[in-house]
Image (cartoon, rainbow, N blue to C red):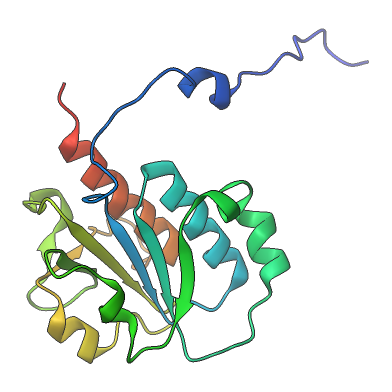
Length: 178
């Protein structure tokens, strides 16, 4: 016998319908860059995340031409058409970034700062890396800052989408005026 439960649900669409946070304009919104991200589920989730935080654009830097766009679209949901995103070649990706943006790489290096202590620039390019190997040294060398998330438990790495979400929502949190 099933318990007597209320099967009504809440709706995030209706909850956020009349809220406009205005944390940034389109010209200074963050840009998300994924270096070597190949799993279509991660690509789709990053596009959706970019739609959640209002990213200006998302660049997926990869030399591969073949991506399962049906899976990407399924995971990205409505963000697939609403977010400005594209695949770009490694030698070209920096040309898609306005010159007044600051590059912040999410990576564990000897000079990485704890993400919660970072002074975020007004215009941020947030860079995450390959699901297996992280961000390459050439990209790290052009990054203005490197940040890391503390790993408290026994697992010492994050999925690229988790890392992106933590980083972008930390940027959002620092912009809120309470």
